[in-house]
Amino acid sequence: MQEAMYYQLHGSDIKCSLCPKKCVIAEGRTGFCRVRKNIGNKLYAQNYAACSSYALDPIEKKPLYHFYPGSLILSLGTWGCNFSCTFCQNWQIAQDSPSTRSLMPERAVEMAKQYGSKGNIGIAYTYSEPSVWYEYVLDTAKAVRQAGLKNVLVTNGFINPAPLQALLPYIDALNIDVKAFNNEFYHTVCAGGLESVKKTVELAVSVCHVEITTLLVPGLNDEVKEIEELAQWLAGVNPNIPLHFSRYFPNHKMDVPPTPKSTMETAKQIASKYLNYIYLGNMSGDGGNTCCPQCSQLVIDRIRFHSYLVDNNKCPQCGNIISIIGEVSF
Image (cartoon, rainbow, N blue to C red):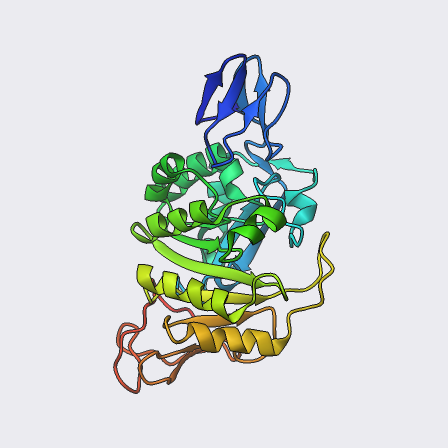
């Protein structure tokens, strides 16, 4: 354990200010995330350096398609979450109490360096919600940056502005889950709130590379109007933000039928009216390919793992610059 950041005494209790839930935590109890515990009127992060999962993943698995495409990244996860999504894809570690191993920041950086010969560019904080691993992520991200490597955050975006602003200078890229574009879904399915996530997206885009993922669940967040509003809002932030629509399959406590492929295709058609880069995940086909938004030329083929880009990420047909950060390793 390590003393947590971002909390205040609240009478005889503690008020956590890491995320918008602002849990008031009595002695011996934890907040909603199950991670931050009041012990003797001090708040402790019980999961500091507690690593539940790690793997060397393709960067596209985060998913990040416009950040060093074709590279690998060391992915680390812990336990705990400030959401309780009924469809959680990683509920065994986010909502349960998995076994962990100690992985101090210095050792994590050593591992990242060791994987450098295999194409690793840094560390991604993922699998469970990294914002509830805040103190560890901040310490490790500083060490990773000092080592000349990259930091990636895969997050639900439900974090208060002050801790986010303190962390962002050390983060190179984020994939932020926008679970839906309606508050009812956030409240009833995730126990969260849309407006706080929107603020995170808007703040993060001003500092580093951002991509968005939305899991489309039939009948809950896949209406045409909602998808259009999501795309319009993102386009107002930056039309080059890549948006990943992910196909839902039954998981955890939700038993809704899988998302029809036709719904996925419709979502892409709608969003493409406003955004330049739309991707379809969790389904076969060419939905993961990158095409030039100006002339529709295929520029990155993720089925055949091949890039057609020329002269610093330009389209070979029309010369339009494709919005990509870093080298392409395909």
